[in-house]
Amino acid sequence: MACMLFLLSSVLVAQNKYVGAAKCKMCHMSKGKQYPNWSESKHAKAFETLKSEAALKIGKEKGIASPSTDAKCLKCHSTASTVTAALNGGITNEEGVSCETCHGPGSNYKSPTMMKSKSDALKNGLIVPDEKLCLKCHNSESPTFKAFNYATYSAKVAHKNP
Image: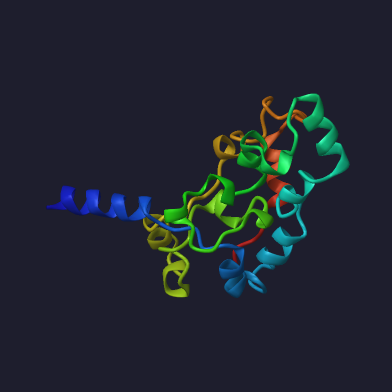
């Protein structure tokens, strides 16, 4: 019976939908200023950088006509680009690298009641980001890759949890 419950909970977590940063904002606007910190970050503006002159130039050099529509670029510049329609509950490309890139799709852990218990939130899909997760994008595949020191960069994006 316990095995069956575990399998069922695993399936439910796997089906979490992406809700978008606006849903996260409702609770994380003032608590530790998590949303304002993200919205002012390079992560939040990652999709927009694909439309910049520099990105267009790099794209041209790599044979990419439009970085803002190219899957190789979007996979690291937009959370929404990697989400299937069935799991998209409100996320858009314009959000760039959103909360759910690092913390997982939020539909099952976003409620204030759930978030009061970290262990419950973790059981329902919350991810605590680690170096391995960051290295999915911060790696030498990127045409603008710079040395990535996890300790240094994670400190720059850290947002306290009140």
